[in-house]
Length: 336
Ligand code: P6P
Image 1: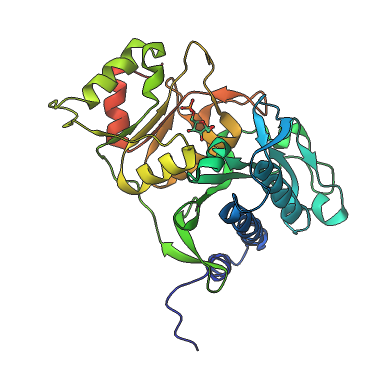
Image 2: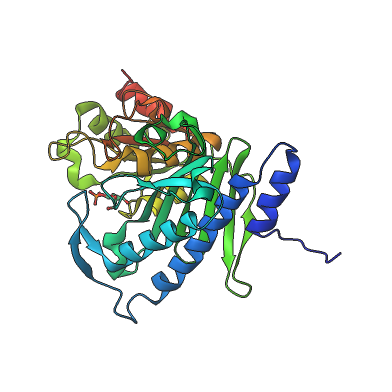
């Protein structure tokens, strides 16, 4: 037996499946499929700038945002692997108005649906800032063998089976959470495999990083302004002053805060009265991941995972991170 110290993603998911005799291996297969798509996306992200894959695609997505060519490529890769796998009955994408039914015989009998943002932060592609793929896995609620319906996608976040993200940064990492925990895998280019590098990730109970777009400060509710002010001072309750870190790419900001401790905030503003981030494609998956790691996530009124969705692309405010920092925020900006 080769003395293999580091498990690959495939080995890890198969090991996890072996833990449960009843497991069908579909979820493990789904995660391996997503790993494959992200390896293909990674190749193109890494050579962006050398080939004509940069710049705008000339179209706008359902959010009315300019679509970068890499967005389209990433979206196509995710759909391709999931449609040709054995575990996914359909998908919802931040880039596509409606959900997509996979209507071949195998897919119709698959028990999961996947929602994803294929390339979040794509506005940063041209300036070489880390970007990411975000995904969320639900068990379908309609009968196997039938085409999925919108009800399979509009499920509360606390019904997620798994969620994760891939960050295309100084290294490429895939982090995914199930109810058994959160684990991080770093892509080893030498063997083209994601290898377990961050087992059993836990969100530090507190930290000294706060992440928010200060440019919107005067549009924030008073309680949020007061909390931000407290973050900038040495106060008995917050310790402080904290360091402000905001990259403008959610995957990078939340990933850093998950590992080091911190709080990320995207409140509502006058311009975005419902918030900017998407509940199904950004807030729900990250809320699941951070909660499974011991952190907290709200929309300023309630737990993100308890928000009842009514539209695939609905937006939400987001406050997410270390539990003690979230508690501190709520002294200034209490939940409803
Ligand atoms: P702002 C990227 O467009 C994104 O959706 C997130 O990745 C990021 O956290 C946020 O928007 C940044 O928004 O308004 O601060 O530039």
